[in-house]
Image (cartoon, rainbow, N blue to C red; front, side):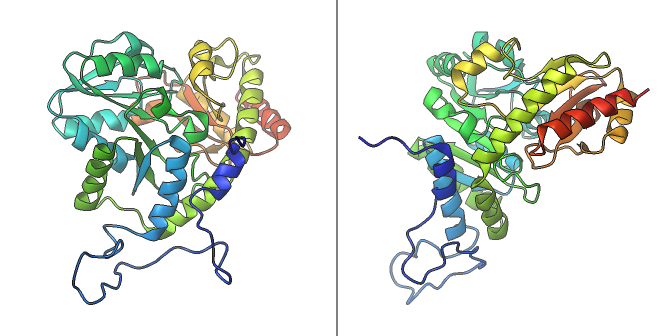
Length: 366
């Protein structure tokens, strides 16, 4: 038996077709809203209208599905993907959501009129799911970077008759495979590390259940939360370097987190890749590799502002997973965290330069 392909090979070749002689090795996006129907008799072709399908979509869906072990459906954004999961899987019972996960997921569920119970990420394995129809966990959580045991949550939820969805945005398809750990669905914002260049907004849902795949894709077609072919093509191009980017981002996150622990202006440094992080033991069991997102706390909001103003390499931005290092003070968006909590997304710069810049900025805060 041949050895399985490595991460670098899979992200580069995933979703690629075998070209005929003379075909472009790197085909561009299919920019069309309509497709030729022929004589009009019989069933329509695979592609007939741009809201229902596009070859560019299927290429990226094949690549992501291969990485996650299921059928992928891409959406116009990560929140559109979350909305599809809530709309197709959340009734008739309660939706269990992380109290410390991405805040808009909680807001959306309430807007949809769904009964919601909030559970902290670390408490999810011990939660009660008897009245639940859907359990959504985010691990590592955003922005706290807490972790829960997906396999335990899945087993308990399934025993109660509930489906399990895992927001895998922070971990990425290379860092974690929730379907293999018992989850029914994976949802993610591909705006972040998967596309990785800060130039697209995109999301996806992956499941190994054909019935769920059909339900999710029907929700996309009828609801119209479809991505543009150009954005999908850019994300597929970005996916090809995910292996390389994750390696550098994780190395930078480790270097920055280690340095931050020694600085007197900083407290509560969290990155699951640190051996003594509270989340490390569980994360090491279920994650295949680390990523570049860490968090730490400064004295207050003003201190965060001074830090960002003094830094030459850390940009103030609310997304994460990109080439450039960025930081975001999360309380400004409504997260229930300390005013000085910073989520930092380590980019792909040289580690020495980043550590030097971050420490110098902290020293200049005054």
